[in-house]
Image 1 (cartoon, one colour):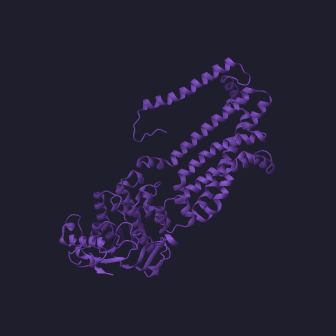
Image 2 (tube, chains in turn brown, yellow):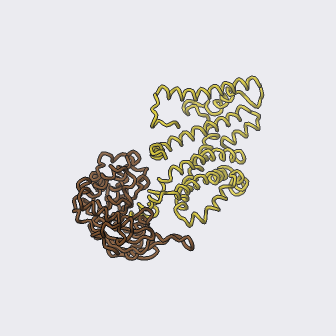
Image 3 (tube, each protein chain N blue to C red):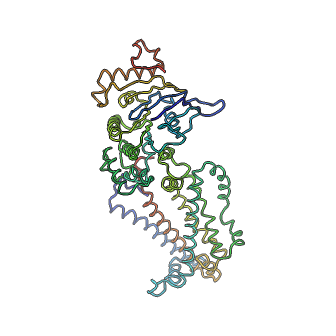
Amino acid sequence: MLDVTGISHTYGSGAKTHTALGSITFTVEKGEIVCIVGPSGCGKSTLLRAVSGLMPPSAGESRFMGDAIKEVPVDLAFVFQEYSKSLFAWLTVRRNVAFPLKARGMSRKERNRVVDEALESVGLADAVDKYPWQLSGGMQQRVAIARALVCQPALLLMDEPFASVDAQTRAELEDLLLDVRREYNTTVLLVTHDIDESVYLSDRVLVLSKAPSTIVATIDVTPLGPDRDQITTKETDEFVHLRGEVARLLRYGHVDEVDGQGVPARAVAE
Amino acid sequence: MTSTVNRPVSKGRRAAEIGSRWLVLAVALLLWQLATEAAKNPFFPPPSEIGAAMVDLWLSGPPSQLFMTEKVAIDIVPSLLRLLGGWAAAGVIGVALGLVLGRSDKAYDYFSPTLNFLRSIPPPALIPVFLVLFPLGTPMQLATIIFGVIWPILLNTIDGAHTLDETVVDTTRSMRLSRPRFLITVVFPAALPKIFAGLRVSLSLALILMVISELTGGNSGIGDQMILAQRNFDMPEMWAGIVLLGILGYVLNALLLAVQNRVIGWHTRSKSLTGR
């Protein structure tokens, strides 16, 4: 679905250059949910922008369903951290979610049906006629998710989507994401700095190093199974072990420099 | 405007607040009346005389015309048409140009020094030029108003369009909106708060330029009426024009504010809630 080959990015020129991304290669398969986790300032957002066509990378290439990405593909949708900025403040919730459909020329009747469905699945059926600023942060992010899903994108890109809400809301939104991506059969690539979140949501976790960042390890999280629960999943030995593995990789950067607790079992060094 | 969102104000208290505001005006009028009566200066007629002159000039017509005299059609209607026509034309041109210039980095860089220079010219200074360029009367007056009031609208629209949040731009990238559609459905509403700020500055500026242009070259309008009254040493009639301009400015601004609150209520309320 998404093939990223040797993407790197350098900001600025001359003496002030800052290389945010080293050479990054990975793929996202159809139906997968992949989390990229990395220390803050490691260029996670830059990576997401570079692979999606929002910003041309300095080097490397990313392919979406086989085609090289030059500009943002139609079949791709974004959810950003700043929900209050990405929503249209002048439109009601219904019109916000209907906006991309209207741009595609979908009929009013069809639009209403699809929008109602999307708002239903994110639990906002009662808020259709409200304005974004009348909603809590968590509800605003639900609107943003509904707006991203309403066109049934093949790939959903999320940049720290739950970083600006409280812990309780965050847990709710994580579960919501797992539910809706199953319902809409969407492939998800999500960037986060939160280790628990990355393990809880993913099929696969890509661990980034500090800038110039490279992928330190790819961790398979499928042993946790497809059905997850905020309490029981996070209690399992499997989860505790995996989150420890990711944390260790983040702290030491290399699998061979671990703190005497043993080499991470499932880590595959690049 | 006092906020009624967080602090519920009882109806009685609100009425009292509004009442006391008008009371100040009434007292000021009374003092003006007393002072001018005492001074007996022919250049400063008392407000009662000015009021009488206003009624005499414009509101002593037959009931079938809502008491409006024929002078209304000569003095007030042309002024209003020029004012609103010039302002509206400047609004349409300014907003359309501003949206395009504001969203294009290249155009923005190329044009901003020129625009800032043109804006810096005091609009009345161009009246002599327009007097030569355009036929005397409405064409010259319209040109003066449009050229004078377009800058606040244009520059505010450019600013509003230019500072559109990047998150919004990124979010809409995958929606593949056509350029005009993007400008009209995303950039325009996002820039509306700034556009309205520009429109309000421009409206008061349009009133000023309307009077100046009528004082210098015209044969109708409030400014023209004032010049005629002054030449006839009819001071109450001259003052009648001044008071009418004040009323006009007040009413137009109040109307625009009402429209603004309807159109961008989402903006003020979202700001008051998030405290930004």
